[in-house]
Image 1: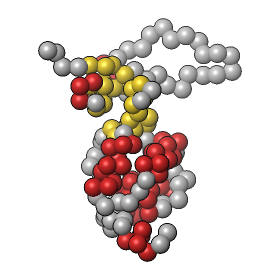
Image 2: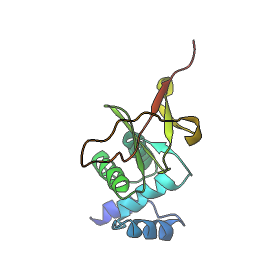
Image 3: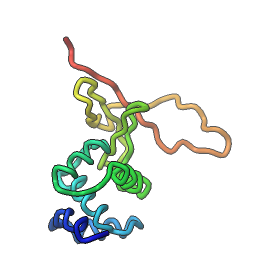
Image 4: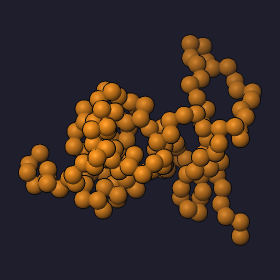
Length: 148
């Protein structure tokens, strides 16, 4: 990476050493881009974020990173157990900083996801998994919109 590209990254926050350790413990090399994106993702508490929204935040914050890199980083964080993927439909995927088992409301007219407390949904009657497989988790996304 040339000097101009390096200077386009904002300085790491005071969370930098903590985020570096988290990435290393997850088996990820703490590159400047990963650290900058992790700071945006985890810097303001629990949240649900799409790749496009994170890319826009990065751009507004002066973090020079491509949309492809944002997608790759989010997938790497998910694969490392640092994020949970919430698929609303084929065109909408969000990443959740809360990796515990829980479900979501998708607010259609706001294009956003919010948590449903885990005790508010009871799953019954799941089929047996195919031979040689086990159910890893069940995701429920309840689509809602404002009443007219």
